[in-house]
Image 1 (cartoon, rainbow, N blue to C red):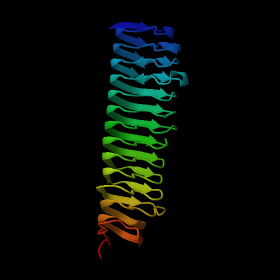
Image 2 (cartoon, helix red, strand yellow):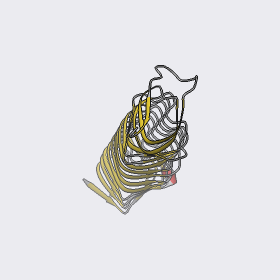
Image 3 (cartoon, rainbow, N blue to C red):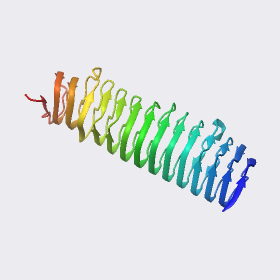
Image 4 (cartoon, helix red, strand yellow):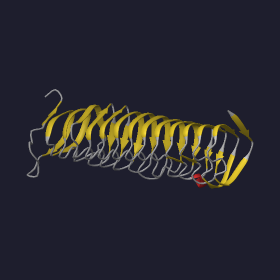
Length: 282
């Protein structure tokens, strides 16, 4: 592997179609497509200021690097990436990619990141700002996530999440086969129109959570007092610890809680309208 150290590159395609390179303490200046159509690339202690630095790259490692705002749309149409200990201020990262491993990464403008990707493995990721992270992606495993980005994990499939703190409305809309463990989910309209969404040991806050959900499962979950009109038109099995303020028009299944503030069943309930709702011990 050729080592390129302590260099600067600018302009268009300075390292186009390179292979077997180790870039150390390299700065990619203003320009476009610096490392395009490359294979087997390692970047350590590098700074990326130009647009679109990694497109159509196959097999690469990024470690201890920085993506400035100008390094937007940096990683598209790539595969087999390992990224760690990296700070990203650029938006629109990770598009149409396969096999991504990300560890100890902070993204300060998480706008439209991780779109249409397959095979994402995340450890200790922080997302700030932006909208729609992870949209349309699938086969995702997360252990450690803190996010205040808007509308995360919409239209995703086959996802497992551990130890997350997510603060946004409209998270997990129209998802399929998603399981979330030991996490804090803050924001109204959580999980609407989901299929096979399972929450285990989670705390939920925000208005109207988990409506229009199909085959929803909650195990040992807790709810903030502000959660009202939960489970409208959902089919579910829910084991709730502590109190839930209000349940409205669930379609079928069973809901058990230690305490239920109120239940709204009105003329608008949909068939089969046979959900069993009860307080534990009664």
